Length: 235
Image (spheres, rainbow, N blue to C red):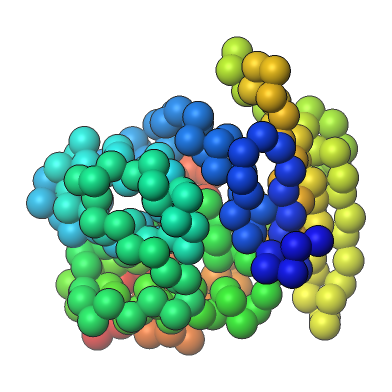
């Protein structure tokens, strides 16, 4: 494994991979599928948004369509190269980010809160706390804890453009914390990629405790699946 990669993450396939195993070409080809359309009321025109881990801009570009002012942060320069120049692009690690600015909304998508390393999880939320305005909110997306605990090998998702399969799966307790290690295989046309990663299932009470420790009020679910939550800074 490349020594520059995080120990929990690897990736293979056409094009380059980021240090957390994400394939830039796969993300570049991905199409927006309505991921944040149900959150539109939180992203009114003129809202300043800090998109943490923006990748190639899948959500950032939709936020522009909403009329938001968007700052996108990613630690992959190759990912950022595919983000619109209408987005203010910041090449940096989330956990060390300190822009000295505050935003109406800090967005932490993609289940980043489920990172396998507790220190990194806390650093992500601390970065959000540094950048959210007193009147603003953190909006985060978590992984489905039940699915992480029960997922099995085999097909995960099928569409006319992309198929996803779970090709490796292991569960263990590390330092007293439940951890899931998984490899997904993505196929798009004649091309295939893999992404191996480790995550921790977090129940809502655990997410609430993490947010509380960093100065946020109790999170409020924004969808029926309870995958998206909003939390305001405690006053």
